[in-house]
Length: 153
Image (cartoon, rainbow, N blue to C red; front, side, top):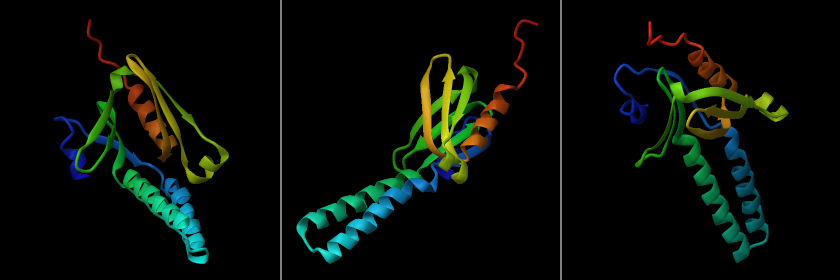
């Protein structure tokens, strides 16, 4: 959380925060276990290389899961990733027109999904494998439905 709080602007508060779902680690973990079993029963250099590749894939997934956050504040939606070097992609709420939520049957069981942002000046932004994706969509919709400030009154 401390790596995120210094990104916030004055009077900006976090309304909703989510991460990539833990399910993204299952594929690399199963592949790592499979290559380990192959390497144990059929010792050979090719299975050793497959096992090393599987460990690297698992480590990359673990880093993605641990150091990627999706944050909705009262002013913007952000995707923050990285540990030493933070990469932040921001979408001001004024620029977001609509939000879609898409899921498969397995996503319904796991409470994951795909959230897509559409808006003015925003190239379509799609966020996959999100934990609590439906709640994120609802939180963004609740911020978009706030009564706008009338500048010409």
